[in-house]
Structures are given as C-alpha cells and as structure tokens.
Amino acid sequence: MNQLSKSTKPIVIMGGAPRLVKDMAKVPADAVRVSANWHALAHFSADYMVFIDDIVGGKPVQSFIWQYGVPTISFRGYANHIAEFPYPRPVNTGIYAAWLAAQSGQTVYLAGFDFYSSGKYISGNKAPDKNLKQEYFSRCIANLKRLTDGADLRVLNPKIKQALKSPI
Image 1 (tube, helix red, strand yellow):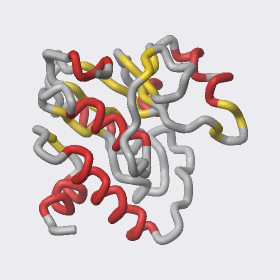
Image 2: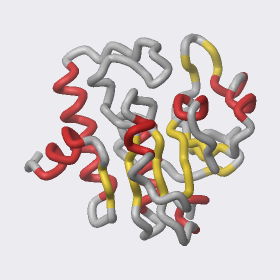
Image 3: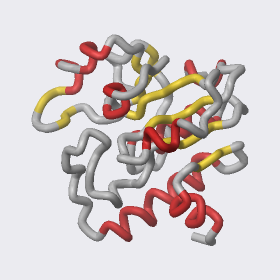
C-alpha cells in the first residue's frame, strides 16, 4: 500500500509541461495534488512529490529534494513514504505517480503532461531531448495503458487522450 492509495479524494498528478496552468483549471479544487518531480512546485502547492531518479543534472536527488518542503513518495529508501515499484520500470516519473494514484480507486487527473513533446518545461527551461520523440511518446502511452488499466484516468492533454484510445 502506498500513501496515495489511501486517498478518498480525486488525485491530480502535476507534470512539468507548459500546459500545466491551463490543465489545472479543469481539476477539482479538492483534489490531492501530487507533483511528478518538482517542476510544478513553482506554480502550485502539492500534498506530495513523487520521484524515481537518483541523479539529476549530475546531482544526487537526495541532496536537493528536501528544499521544496513537500513529503516525498518513491521506492528510493530516502523518501518520506516508501512505495513499491512496478516492473518493468515505467519510462518516467509521471507514469509512476499515475500508477501509484490509480491504486486508490479514485479519479486520477493528469495535468501538465506532454511526454517531452513540447521540448520544454513549464519554467521555460529546455526539457531533455528524447531522441526519436515519437518512439518515446509511444513507449509512454504503452506504459500508461499498462499501469493504469481499469483506473478512472482523466487525461487533460488531447494528444495523449487520443493516443490512449488507440490500440498499442
């Protein structure tokens, strides 16, 4: 059992894409807010932050994650709340967070997601250049389908929503 699986309210997973502010306008005000990594925290408060990476930009995540003052959830031993990890490994943190939230049985919203297709974060910083972006996007869709099958998932990005309706 993970911290999010105990929720009795809808849950929103906040990604770091430029569309986050627009997407959040469509999320119920009482939703539990979960930041996938820390990108959303400059714009919205969060109840939790989920992370999977151990090193980002050459720095250990453990050395800076606490500055945000948000309880963390991860399979990493230094998180505030330790959660299990699915296999095979999801391709990004947002998908891992969606999988954790889906275990609650509550409605799960995905806000600020584009799987790097915009090429930037909400901050305006350049997002990682995922070679073969369509291949990466397709892998993300396959992972999201596999890990949230049967969940009440509300995807706010039309491109991702459409892709989820297509067979893998």
